[in-house]
Image 1 (cartoon, rainbow, N blue to C red):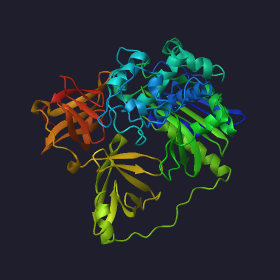
Image 2 (image 1 turned 90 degrees about the horizontal axis):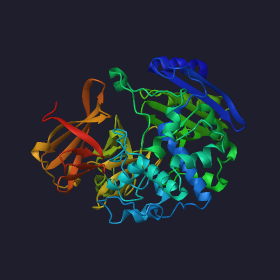
Image 3 (image 1 turned 30 degrees about the vertical axis):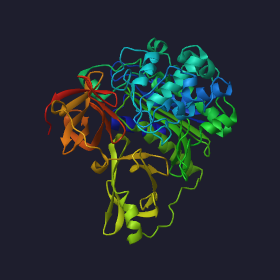
Image 4 (image 1 turned 180 degrees about the vertical axis):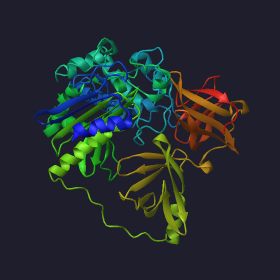
Length: 537
């Protein structure tokens, strides 16, 4: 199946090279390489070719942290300033947030951090190393109160790795090699960019905007713990074998089990993020996984304990969905072969017009809510019925003062919670903890932009334009629009986020990100913005 599916998907999605591997609890079962390490002039990909795994690095960093816990080097619930006494972070929500930020919060993405740092990011790697990158996190602003909900972020994992480096007294890459990779026999796995760059059998990352102009993507990145790992299919399978059948990758069983549980779940939540790993359900099959994408690479690493199977898919292209597609296909086909029952939807619920007594409670929830990657929905009341509109409208039933159930294919439930000002500000999916932020003009304080700042801005990834923003005044409120460019096609507007001015020329968006106009160089969410026009289409 894989031998036919991978070449077809590579051709369809224009992927230069792919490596795939499968294991069970007894060891690697099969692996293969396809294509080339580079689009032009590369070597044939094999099972021993090194690929960047980007955010899948977080799984290994978290495992290393759990081993450090087992060695009493760190504690999961100790405030992080015990290990990083010089660390601080800005917040518009609380005065001393660091006292609530623990290693567990960092590893579970519940500390409130934004995604990028001022030095070293997915847009500009800068001239600093891992240490300088981590120190620059103190200049960032939290997006919400520590511990309020899950929000994916590179910065928490990097700080966790930085704390491990401090307590170990050796560079993070050296600590990981000594405590994790060498004992597991992962001899071609490294966080050390110098080791990687001297290796002729490594994949080169590809991303269409860079390929078009003939530029190479960066190899060494400062976001080491969160995204700096290079490995091979064979090495990754060695890790997965230890994860199957209750085995542990060098940490006690209770800590390994804790890593694979959803951290800080909502009442009724069963899926979500543990400590460096997603706890998920793929068509009725329980799966633990972590993917990664960026710097010209995409990958997926997963294991399904019920099926006793692990899968690794590595690619050297950012412009594809192949890793997730192939991994899910393998898991689904094995489940069918073994007769694993699929999840079935519950009985439909009757949705009727809201009683007048409950209409006021539902009215408090009405508004637009925007999630990661600008995924938005609207909660509305029409003809006495509560609806959730996304790409289509779904009837919703108010099942509590701050909870609704949506009649969609998954019978989703959502919990609405307050922000610091006391109004409903967040919409949390009970299934997996996914958060959306309320984006209503009525909840945003009046704010004014300097007319000189109004206009179109471009964001660049290492000098190459990869997205644009528009700052504008909308009546009494300032607004930022994010537009995602599609390689030369006209940009498409996504969503207009409301801005509140928290200090002179410093604005907080409805998604908790900071727009900083205090200097000539504008930044949004620590991404540098270059003004290119006064008006836009």
